[in-house]
Length: 117
Length: 117
Image (cartoon, rainbow over all chains, first blue to last red; front, side):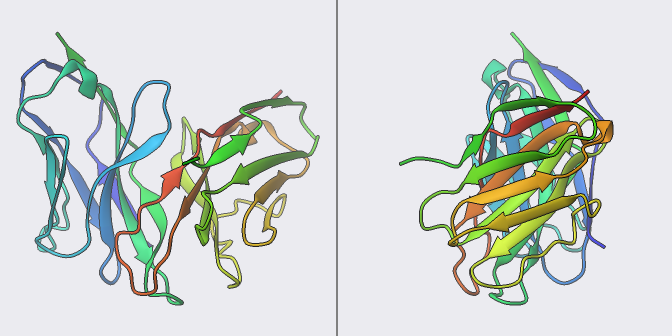
């Protein structure tokens, strides 16, 4: 079955540091890949996505590139801020046999990022 | 517009009792998902409804868990004879599925925190 593996956490960084959160996946076919974020006291929300190999998703200064050859989707940001402190989840989506569209998400364990001033 | 809403936000119950959790998806969204988030297991898929198709129940952990979606809108997740290991945050998500569409964003509700004593 499908699976997503994220690096172990938590991660603590100083403001303006470079961030990399590793994510690798196992899947049959051609899944779409996502990063979701959960800020303290808030619900889960989509951060960025990529739907095919070599696609780069980006949002709020974060980027991730869909690497089929290494089955990876690592999240990066050049300069983190205190407001980036949150839990980050890597996920992949099955493809529905009925609609051909994405369906249920398989998540990694999540990693807690704390950014100190 | 309104997002995904869930009720109750918190539920405390005694072992052996039945509970019902409700999800109101975003109006017009054809797909509805239930997940649960627990410390030990991370985020797990439970069940997925898409239009008039038979639901994908592959993530339900036991036959004590069931869900229905009435009129293609509101969904109820029922847990019978609750056990302590059912304690978790139950998340509902919805998305607008377009046939062949990729990267469809799932919008998550705030969750219901279930505590089984």
